[in-house]
Image 1: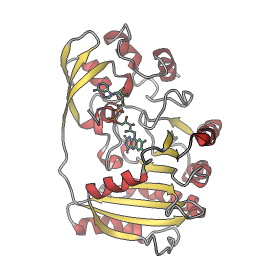
Image 2: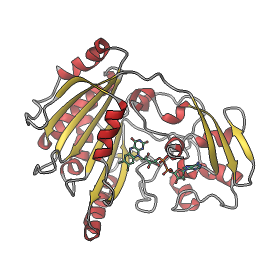
Image 3: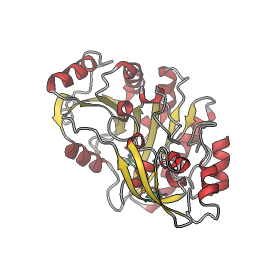
Image 4: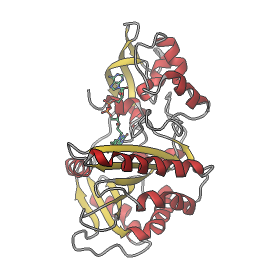
Length: 338
Ligand SMILES: Cc1cc2nc3c(=O)[nH]c(=O)nc-3n(C[C@H](O)[C@H](O)[C@H](O)COP(=O)(O)OP(=O)(O)OC[C@H]3O[C@@H](n4cnc5c(N)ncnc54)[C@H](O)[C@@H]3O)c2cc1C
């Protein structure tokens, strides 16, 4: 069932920055254990498994057959989009980092580097502000302070004029995201990291500039996703998801031909190797967008001392019937304990 891996790993859904993780909305789960027991798990029944079901991702040691969720009302959506020359990266990202903690809680904030249109010689930055607000007036009051504080004039390309507080919808946004993903037949490699909250906005921007400015192909993208204030809140309830920071960074290298595998894989490896070399820059990684066989080193997926899928696995699937992270259980344990 599509979406269940998303929930198990935490789930960075719409407006995660303010609404929190998708797994925070899970109130119960039906599972089949490795020992073939059929169980309902929740905050009071089989609590250790329920804890793991909210954040263990592929390390969850049972098969989910049903999730029980709290839902949110569907709100109207409005959006502002600003396109900037890639040379403005540091200025734009610093601005976003500074405004994020106090921006309206109705706003999701994302910065993407991509080739729009693909014929352009350099990547373009797109700052996306998506508002989930009950009325146009509320959306305007969320988006106006952004509009009046732009750090530099956006690009004036006739193909990509800026948009201010225009209506949008989930179907339109899903269609746009689908169009931006790797098309069938293309090859892709993704990876991600959380950057430390101890870094200043200027340090975050300096660390990410090389990746955003050097996309290896016209189909590739890099993304910064604002997580503040969700990243600063005490976690709700009982959940294993414990790794997060104000700055989620991911790359999606996309290419067409096998002969370019080496170049694109190396680009992804180099981006994260450079960040790993800069002491104190990385806080950890998100299970989504991670490939456990490609990069283990930065794979600190849970906060120090905040939970260990290895312990739950040992109790519920001691024989290792459920495959778990493909890198193997021992390596997982090392990663967790640092
Ligand atoms: C371009 C791109 C954009 C992305 N955007 C986002 C995003 O916005 N937010 C986000 O959070 N992630 C994002 N991701 C990561 C994506 O969410 C993950 O790849 C996720 O695994 C997909 O969810 P799924 O439910 O399809 O997972 P699946 O691929 O179905 O499952 C992932 C893993 O979960 C486990 N699993 C799945 N079903 C069950 C079950 N029934 N019982 C037990 N274990 C199970 C398995 O270990 C499986 O390998 C993105 C990835 C890409 C490439």
